[in-house]
Image (tube, helix red, strand yellow):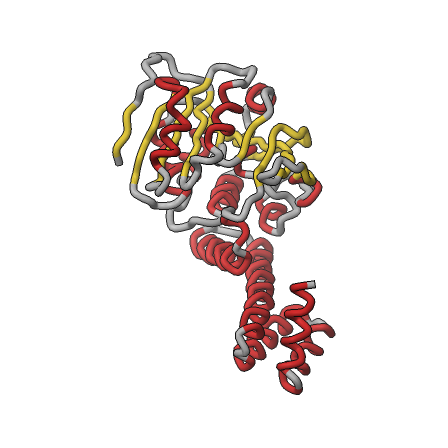
Length: 322
């Protein structure tokens, strides 16, 4: 990995802002502007070019900030490896994660660091954010779509009673290091894996419902690939099942959650197989999904696949285009 630290300040900043960048040249400027207009000023910014194909555009975006940015480059290894590179270079007590297509409100770091200072036993804190389209149209907030209900525990995060937006979380650097950093095998839901491990080590995570930024929703988002997202969650849960010491009740909850995601994956794949006229695989996927859900609708779908798969396919495609 190449890189140069152009920040000559000898004193360690309170916050290290970690921004992984891949195909981010169109968005990175707005993300950086939101950082450098913070009311809280004691931070450093580390941008990690993760083998981006638009490097020239990306470097144009950081050029106006000169030596106020630490710029690292590496071959493409995914967001986990990019964030880990930034964390290893970081000097701050706190790590603020920001994706290159998101942006913070001016008081974001002030609010988040205040909570961490007031709660020394807390390993991480997160806020709400508003979803926005590329045209600037504002949508619902993250917590309107994915409410956080009750305290953040290993179990509540496991079953997604709480969900943590990556770009709107600030963590103690040592807590992240102690948890083992991001697992660079994962290019999706890597944050879910990290937060579960951090909670398992006994570190608290708290949240508040102030809307402190905007999260951009666009076609290039990794979260758009639904079957791949389900697969990634399943892989994380299988890994944690194998490495964590859990109570029998928590392990059963984890395995039940894994079965839940596997059943949803089968439902998604059944639609793909049906569209491809691969009716045998569609039948197998619906059968597996129904073993978990035991749904009258799935039983009817299974009957349709066996009796009139072509008609069922036409109806599905018509619903998708209507």
